[in-house]
Image 1 (cartoon, helix red, strand yellow):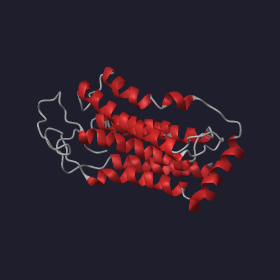
Image 2 (cartoon, helix red, strand yellow):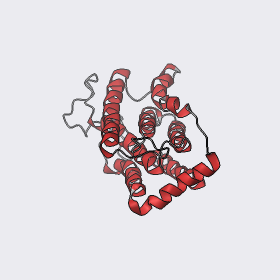
Image 3 (spheres, one colour):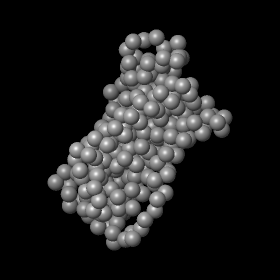
Length: 234
């Protein structure tokens, strides 16, 4: 289990470091062009999940489960069932608390719905298609829907508030990472499920921002879905 925690710590630090990189294309309107480098982090997580799920890494994946059973046998907690929604709730909760988001609530809600339709839709299709067995013997393991949901919310939270409130990405991705670890501690997912789910959640929400047309915002008139994006450093 120690290896799993170390791996997730490294993953989280990588995510947070990427979130703090200065973007040289910032404009006065705070609209940003699509950049391929924004794909690196989710792609790396998803590829890592596929690699860990492959036959060549089967022994390492099972070793993590064995360590979990040795140190946390019988452990069960339903906190992750509720905490997965915390980042999404905070997207609106922070605004109620007086913090200024990047996007107005109408466009923000449209982006959230679009991102979650893509995110949870792909999770459902992959689970039903691949029919991977969970560590506890039940069905539909790959990928982790809880983790995908948490990282989608964390990405939106970081995009909306991270520029003005530097601590937000640390908290949002930290909570999402903790949920992924909790899914493994509860013996519901392998590390491969969680890694792929994290990348899928991040990518789904970014795609929702990149393709959003901001129909409730007359300032954005471009027909190019990648040309006017309210998105900066994440």
